[in-house]
Structure formats: C-alpha cells, structure tokens
Image (cartoon, rainbow, N blue to C red; front, side, top):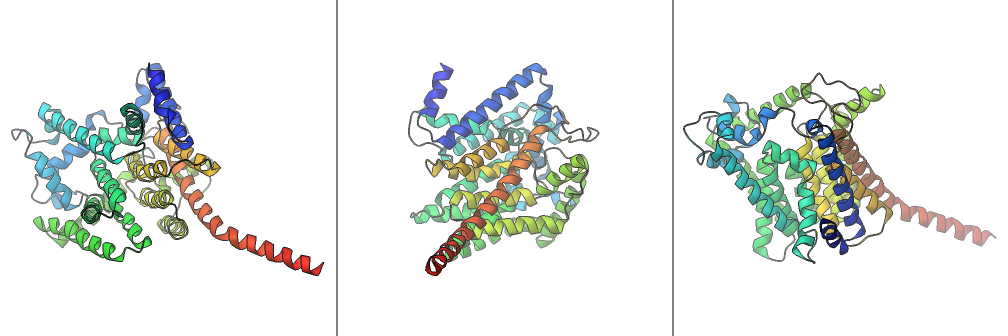
Length: 428
C-alpha cells in the first residue's frame, strides 16, 4: 500500500521533483536504518548534542522577555520585535514557574509549543505549493517529505523562530508581484517583519530593486524601519540597538569555540577543509564578505531565472552569517519551492542543482560524530551531514555564479567566432 502511495505521489511529478523525492526518501530510510543499527546513537550527529537543551531557543527567549532589559541583563541577540512575540506566549504559561527549564518541562509549555508548531506547519503547507494537481496524498507527500528533512528537524528541536520567519518570506515571494494591491502590500509588510525577526532577510529586499519596483522598495524600507526600530523603545531605544549588535559579536566569538559541527557558513567550511587537508584555507573576514558579495552580485545582475536569484540571496545569508547553524538551510526552501514551480526541465544542470538540494536537506547518518577525524573534544563535533550540506551549498553558489558569467560571455564568444569565420571565408 505504501509503495502504491509513493508511486501515486510521483506519477505527475517532473524529473527534478522525482530526483528530490526519491533522493530524500532514500536518505531518510537509510537514516532510520542507521538509527536502528546504532540503537539511536547516530541521531546525535544530526541534532543539538545537549539533550537537556531541547526546545530552549523558544523557552529561553520567553524567559529573557520577562527581563526589564534583556540586552543588558541577558546579552540577548534578537531584535526587540521578537520579545513582543515571546511576551505574548509567556502570558500563556504557568506564572508559578520562574525558569525557562520549568516552563519547558511543564505540560502547558509543551502543549503550547506543539500547537504553535502544528499551526506553523499547516501554514507552510498552504504556502509551499509544490503540486497543485492530483489527490491530497499527491499534494501532501512532497511537502511532508520536505518538513522531514534535517534543517526542519533541527529547527523543530531548537524551537527557533526562524520557522515563523520562513512563513513571512514565503508569503513575500508568493505575493510581492501580485496584482491584488492588498496582497502586494501585505507581502511588503511580511518582508519588513521577517527582517525585524532575523535581520538577514533584508537581502531579499534586493528583489524589489532588481525588478525595478522602486515605489514598493521605498514603502518596504519605511515599513521595515518602523517595525524594526520602534519596539526597541520599549527598552533603551537606539542604545538597545547598539547593545544588541555588541551582543551578536560577543556571542558569535563565543560560539566559534564550540567546534566545527552544525555550522554551514563559508568560514566554517573552509576551516574544516583546511584542518582535513593540511592546507591554509582559513579565510579572513574580508575574503568572506568579498567572495559572498561578488558571487551574489554577479548572479543577481546577470541571471533572470527567479529560483537562481533567490538561491544566490539565500546562499549569501547562510554563507556570511556567523550563526549559520543547520536550521539556517531553511532559507534554501525559498528557491527550492520556486524551482519546483517553474515546470518541467530536462537540462543537465537542473538535475545537478536538484541533487545539490537533496544533499543540503537530507540526513547523512554514516561516519559517526567525527568522520574526518578532527576530534570530538568539543561541544559540536563535525558530522557527515554538516560536511555534505556545507559543500553542497558552497558548490551551488559557485555554479550559479559561473553559469551567470557563461551566459553573458557565450553570445560574445559565438559572435566573435562567427565574425572570424566570415572573415576567413572572404579571404578564401
């Protein structure tokens, strides 16, 4: 019966969709087999290693929101709008408890988080329209499969607000070109709110500039400034903004000492390659920003396909951010969904890109917690999933850049060859 359901779900899909579904499903099944053979020990290579810290991104943030100034007293790194969100949920919890761990261990806290997770997943299902035709099973299967990949596992386990930010960005990409004025304006507001949650989605504002939507870009800047800065005046205004930035740098420096695991930015990728090969590949901050800036600009300027532009922007966010842990790969859901929606394509590169998407999202449970032998005497040892996801992401960004350059240069080369051939023909 399950076999027939899978066949049904694949029956109307494109080649690239089948690559994603079959590849991801195969790796998920391999992962489950590995869990069984290792009695669950291989699971530690995929998720946060501290079992006592599960869901604490959510509950710690609720706890921090109870402080008069979470930036000074708790060194928090979230924009102030997030604390309005967490203050609301804090009011729904048992007020007899006084610690985040107590709220996490209380039934009310777990039920509250579960309802938020279910609601968020239902909204994601409505926004991630991989297939519009077919039965409910055929529509649901690819989305459920996507929600079962490692970035979502890690996000669910951490209870990170990036899941709600993804909803806002998906809404923005779905409707920012809508002919419906209400939906178009709502999309701009969603982008502004997403920036006020995670800051980095500001990169997606470049889509408005690329599409020459100057009026929409101006309004989005106004919305963003209001939504981002006004909540800070519940604390110390611009002083809290400065304190938040200082906290971000301090926290980033601290987390660099935790190990190479779970981070998928370009600095971490080159760091583990450097240690493994013995070559000096560790980049400076200048190189990192230059590499990401140049590759993103080239793709943004010379590429017309929407999913590739979105992949370049999402890749820039993940590669440059110091806090690019596994759940940040959720940003790549945005170009993946757009890729699915573009219809059938039999191009070789499209198939390669889809394989890279599979490598970014699917779990790899082999190799234990330290397949490269770089050491486990740290909080976050480097597992196979982080290695393969990091390399797949970096390779995709490079391929997008090279392809963009090739598409610009190819007509000029062809023109030059044709001109020389004509000249030779005249000489003959």
